[in-house]
Amino acid sequence: MTDRQDSPTALNLEQVEELSERQQAYFAKCNEKLGFVPNVLQAYAFAPAKLQAFADMYNDLMLAESALSKLEREMIAVAVSSVNHCYYCLTAHGAAVRQLSANPALGEQMVMNYRAAAGLTPKQVAMLDFADKLTRSPHAIVEADRQALRDAGFSDRDIWDIAAVASFFNMSNRMAAAVDMRPNDEYHAQTR
Image 1 (cartoon, one colour):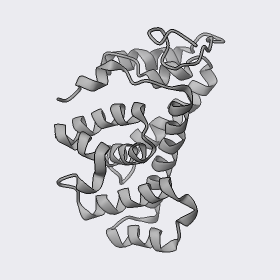
Image 2 (spheres, one colour; image 1 turned 90 degrees about the vertical axis):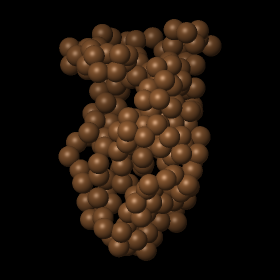
Image 3 (cartoon, rainbow, N blue to C red; image 1 turned 45 degrees about the horizontal axis):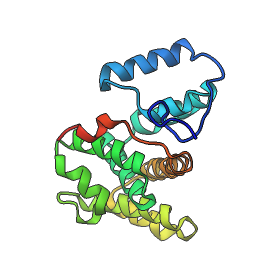
């Protein structure tokens, strides 16, 4: 077991090589924008190739061009993480929902039950219903589920993006649970 004050996870993983200049710059940008480096990045830093793969996928899904807003992608992250009871992602992405929505209560509402969250559009509820079903019972996804998203106004490309974000956070939630990843304390006070 490792000293939790010095490690973002319960695993004792030694860093095998130095971070690349690109990764060091990424950590510096996190420090500049957030005031800290998220523990999920610190956790992956033991293996720079794994860190780069994680960061590239995250940045593509959450920040690249999409018809889904950043807020909607964060809402998917929280809805999926709520089903999975992922403490790390509920804390970190709940803070992002609070910030992007400018609504301090929305992050907590999303954590508890997105269906009870005030102000969600029917289109957003359809998106979150799909992400929820994909998380709870992926084997049960059928054409009617995709059609429900189309009927709500999503394109097939949007459906891909919804599924990709939900799938990524299912993977991330499982990794966080497996290694007992803890969120940075700073997330708890953000946008309150």
